[in-house]
Amino acid sequence: MSEKQRSVALVAHDNKKQELVAWAKENQSLFETLGIYATGTTGKLIEKGLNRSVNKLLSGPLGGDQQIGAKIAEGHIDLLIFFWDPLEPQPHDPDIKALLRIAALYNIPVACNRASADYMIQSPLLHGEYRPAKPDFSIYTQRITPAG
Ligand SMILES: O=C(CO)COP(=O)(O)O
Image 1 (cartoon, rainbow, N blue to C red):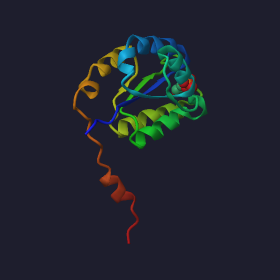
Image 2: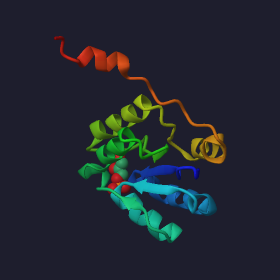
Image 3: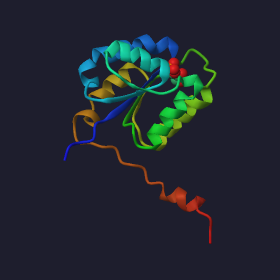
């Protein structure tokens, strides 16, 4: 049986976009093997940099972070590479926090800078059989199921 293609989400704040695109280009051959989701503006730049199509969602401040979070919850994304800007306040900070929460909840590896992204792309997650465990939510679903 053929393996499901792994998908990565790429997201970068404005001051980090060039760095993300440069990093993606350095790893172009790997990205040819992966599905790519991205927030709107990041996605356009990645398409141009890698000369390939990307599943582009809305721009981050317009709901794109939330859409990436929904894709994670639906099981479409294996890795999140999110070069967020530690020096610039963002108007959609609650959405960013929500995306990082969803990634933690669903046990999705997150890289926030070049060093962690370098580690991540060398991992058996991409090159071997290792799959992170799917979280068990049964304790929560019991709690929210009405009695009766
Ligand atoms: O704001 C973002 C992530 O929080 C990124 O959105 P864009 O890729 O549309 O700039």
